[in-house]
Image (cartoon, helix red, strand yellow):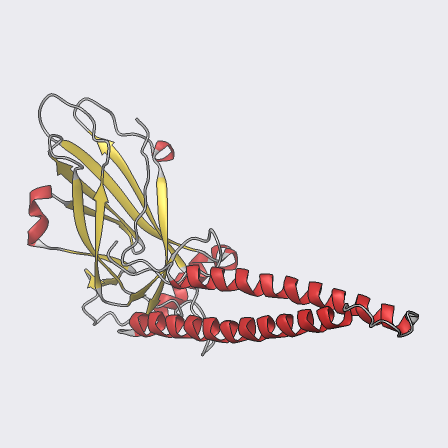
Length: 287
């Protein structure tokens, strides 16, 4: 889907995309291993639907969508036959060669049937979709942070020689999305990037300070370890031993702290570069 992903803050976490309410996004469905047939076209059916990412919202799905519906204005153009829809298909004549047919299942889901020439490398279909809700629509409280929503995609193959595969045999994938008011997605992406850069800058200052402290403590330890001059008493007090041991512990602790800071810096730099220009899901369907 042609939408930038946000910075991934947890290693191995599912990417999150920030979207704008009412903006049209292009979803491309591609088959990397099309079925081999002697003649004719291959038909596909792609299901798209929404679900909540938060477990608490998933226990009260109907109530959450009821809150969204209460705030809907049926006079707005994002209605389908007088009914508000959360995800909306936008017709585009550019992609008529795919023979796209749309069947709405519910306000939060629809199915897309499309055909492709099996002789073409990587048959695909591009679909334009619009999301008509905000991530803050599912709570009555003002000023709450929006909750992520899962945008699921299932694709199954339909051909004259094969029956339709049951849905439970079809591979499923999903995007995590947050929907903002117009231009809100761009602002959020920019703010996240600026915040991460500030954190990296502060971390760099802490690393520089830790390196300076470590160098100073190493010099102090070397000075304390110098041999005693000839003719002077060789008796070393217990206090001197204690101070030397304390310096060694201090050097060890500072070294460990510095290593931890550098590891965090590496993680933050990877985080900053984790955002992508588009959201790509790889799903291998059953043969």
